[in-house]
Length: 492
Image: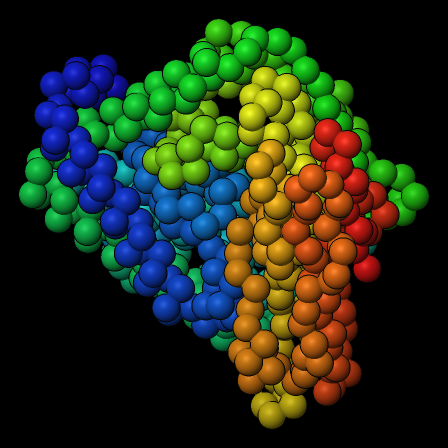
C-alpha cells in the first residue's frame, strides 16, 4: 500500500495537491474551532489547551493546526496504542480514549486523547484526533498535578486505549469510571464529548473530501505531504554550516529533591542535510515529576526546526525524518515506568532552550535568548454559589527571550506553552476569587542591546478556603541571556 501511495504521489497534479492540502488544513481548523466553542472548562474554552489533527492509517500526522506544538509527537503515539490494542477489530463508529503517558503519548494524565477511525470504501484511511487538558482526573491534589508525586499512580486516573464508542453508541461504564475519579465530573465529561464532536466533524469533512476528489488522490496527498515537509526542511538544513555543538540547561528541581537542579545536555551534529541530536548525557530520571517521555522530546526538536525555518510551515510527521534523535533509557528524557511525569513543561522548556542554544552556532542569524518557563497555577475548593467542587486551572505567561534583531515579547506564553492566558473577567465570574492586579513587571526581562520580554504579576484574593498547586520553573535558575545579554529575573 505504501509503495502504491508513493507511485500516486509522483502522478498527483500539483494544483490538486495544493487544493487537498488546503482542505486538510481547513478541516483541522474547523475541528479546533468546534472544540474551543463547545468546551465546558475554562482550560479549553478560554486557554485553548487542546489541539486537533488528522492522521493516516499508520498513525502519522498529516494535518495539525498548531496550538500546542508538543502534540505532533503525542498523536502518533496515541494512535499506535489504539492500533496495538484493537488492531483488526477497529470499525466505523468507534471512538477511543487514552491518556496513559507510557502506553500512549499523552504528556501527562490530564491530557486525554479522543481518537476516531475514518473509513472510505470499507478501508481504514486514517484517524481524527483531539488532545485536551482536563480540569481534574483525581489524585491527591485538585487539578491532578502534584509536584510531590513519586510515581504516576499519584497523578490521577490513567486510561490505556479503551473503546469509548462502538457503532456510535457511548460506553456509559467508561464515563462512569471517569466521572467517579474526578472532582469536576461534569466539566471533564463535557470536554470529552466536545472532543468527540470535533472528531466526528473531521470525519464527515474528510469523507466529503474523499467523495469529491477520490480516495486515491487523498491518500496520495497524505504521502506527498510527508515528502514535501521532509524536503523543505532538508533543503534549509543543507544551507546551514556543518559542525558539532553542545549546550545545557537546568530545571530548578524535580519537586522532591529541592536543592538538586536537573541537567539537560544536548549535542547537535549537523552534516549535509541531516541533524543528529543527542540527549544521552542528560540527567537520570528524577524522583519527582520532572520527567518527560520520548514523544515530547521528538516534538520539541520538530518545534525548534519549524521556528528556525518557517513558522508558517505545514505541520506533519514528515518533519521527523529530518533528524536522528538519541535519548538514554532511564534518563529524565526517557524514564522507566512508573516514574512520574506530570510537571513535564519546565523540562520541555529546558530541552528547547538548550536546542536553540546549540543550533545558534549552526544558524547564527536566528539566535535567541531564553524566555520564561512554565507557569500553571491550580486552585481547588468548593464553589461559593453551588457548593460543588471546582478546579481553577490557569496558565500564566511571562516574557519571551530577546531575538537577534528585536526585543522579546512581554506578557506572553513562550516556546511550546502556547495556550492563552484566561481573561480576568472569566476567572472572576466562574470561580470564588478576585484578581486585584495583573500587570507587567518593570525591568524583569534581561537587559542588553535587545531586551527580554517582561514578566507578569497577577495578585489574587480567594473568597473561600482552597488548596493551591503550582507547576512552574525558573524560580532559582534565571533565563539565560545570549552574546553578553543579561539573564532575566527569576519567578516568584
